[in-house]
Length: 112
Length: 453
Image (cartoon, rainbow over all chains, first blue to last red; front, side, top):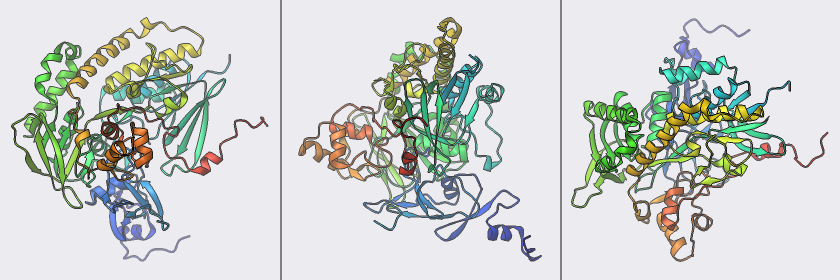
């Protein structure tokens, strides 16, 4: 059994700590280290757009910013790193509570 | 025979749903395989359950959705089909599972219906890779499915019937649509009236959108095109130029450009199966059969024509497949209304295509320093050099010399532009893998030459 939360901890704080959805259906994820409010099940791209973020990748050759282009999983422009895995299509991948989302630079791996 | 014949339907958009329901209602064991988490495809894309929003209403959608339950169609969601193989007796449908797509699954069927839809293409212009520039269909998908906008001040541009609902939807969702920029000439419409009037309801639909745009005070510029998008790390403005001589260019401030020049059929699975194409679309007969026995095709994959045409084609394909799978010759009289709708809609959309062709020569005249291949960051100048000094005569040799079309999207985005720059017609992509497949999934496939255990 889990130890009881301190009485003063608000549900949203507890949710943030445990990576769970809050009663109002929102959850917290991080984007480049800062917390963002998101809804579990919405796409990563939607969560980022809703937070005013429109670019989350830099290209391999010129280092230019990119975000959503086709929005339906065809163009691969919206690649993003989620929980350490690079090359995830932000327009397809659903948000889970506690996701660690990061800008993908180049290939998203250390070898480039 | 005690076991029902099995039909695998690839794609749960209007064509796939109509086909699945028509076949299942006639006793076929139907498995509907689709990449999305919910049925509907792009046209009937439903709001994400995360939003808690009510599903989109509509008679057709309601009929399709309830039909899925009633006819006990097996619906495999989040199955990204990457290849359909045919052996002596049956078909093998290979899919990747879930959003991670790092695990594979294969299913057998006696016949397949390919309803793989299509995707939008955008002809390049300076600045089209800036964040904030998105496809018109992408803007609509994000709005329908997720209720989000990438900005507040939007320009909708390009050509084709999709621009009208996209601009209307964005305006209704609260975006300030600064302009709808359509390259087509409305003066060309009357010449096509005989063809367009075969579906007056579709004409009225278009007029309805136009009225709503005027009500939202959206400025409509015809015979104009976006020639450049401006901004450093994000879109800030576009330059719109008239296509007729003498007019003046104008700069419009915006943080979002939703742009599209048309659609291309998704033919990867059909091509790998060996189906013959006509131009860029899968060739089908009056029963929607491809020339590969046991493989049917319907919807945008057989030619772009919208959801109503996809429904008619899918219905015919499902009925034909059901009859053939039970060893009967189908009676086309049974699907006469769908066949009538199909011929009228094909005629209507051929006329729309003729009116809404992207301005000729524009893709070929894009400046040298403009990126055409977004994945591999290949510029127009590099493709031109491959043609002028290295002797590339088609898109394939241009790709081998420059990497244009060799990246993640496998040329789906840049194909039309690279073809225009090399001065050859757009040819189908010939992609044996319809999506990236992890090597581990390939390694785990059973060896077809191994003796049966």
